[in-house]
Amino acid sequence: IVCLFKYRSGETARGREWVAAFRRSVNRFEGNVHLWSDDPKVWEILDGKDHLVEPNHLSPAVFDFSCLVVCGFQALEEIHLWWNSDEVFKMVKERDALEKTGIFVVDGLQPSVDVMGRNKFSVSDRLMMFELIKTEAFKPMHDYVDGYKKSAERLRMKSNMLFAEGVSGVLLNEYPLDAACGSSWRSRSDMMQWYESEAYQERLMPLRVQYARSLTLLIPIFEDRLEDLKKQSKALKAAEKMGSILHAKAH
Image (cartoon, rainbow, N blue to C red; front, side):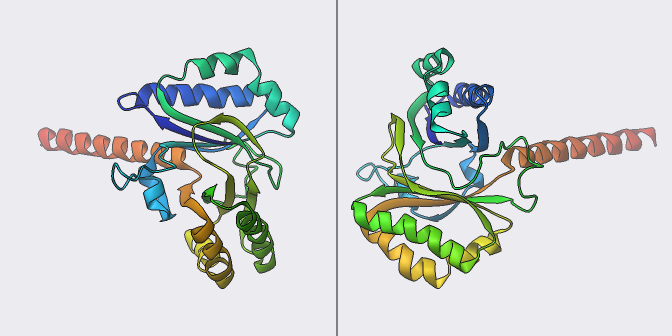
């Protein structure tokens, strides 16, 4: 499940609380949260910047979200059980801290893994590449996602392909998402070998540029762990500074 959320202006804290409750609801129904990220400052935009950040008021961005969550369930029946629950129904009604919401079902290419069970993730995976696509013509973009999977497999890229499909179900439709591709990578250089390959740039990219509006992002898998490290580093520096001050006073 690909989830796009935009926090309402001035409601980021409440929006984050809502998303946290949303993620917990997925876990309670035995689903997994592959990734969540709501810090666009750590996202690298590979292409399609104008579709994330509005260039001007005359050209609104089609994917102007501020939080991305990717969840997984073992079967479609489990998705329906979760989505039709009283808990989720109440949450959806009370999402006033969110300006826009899009929740889409995409068929996965491998079993889902929860981000908290990181020992189950490939230990080398550090980044996730996402392509979000609004199609302008169905057939070329069907060829795109089909060719995407085949090319990645043929080139034996060092990645875990999570999904590369058209949207198969829409739960909340406030974003024009028609297809999505997602893969995890050990390093940026490995990902760039794929992104800059002849297969991607000369065979796939022209289809996406001509027949779709799209956004491609590279997002750290361990964003929350990076945030913890930043906090620990600040706390250590503060302690060291205080220790220096006390040492100076003692002398």
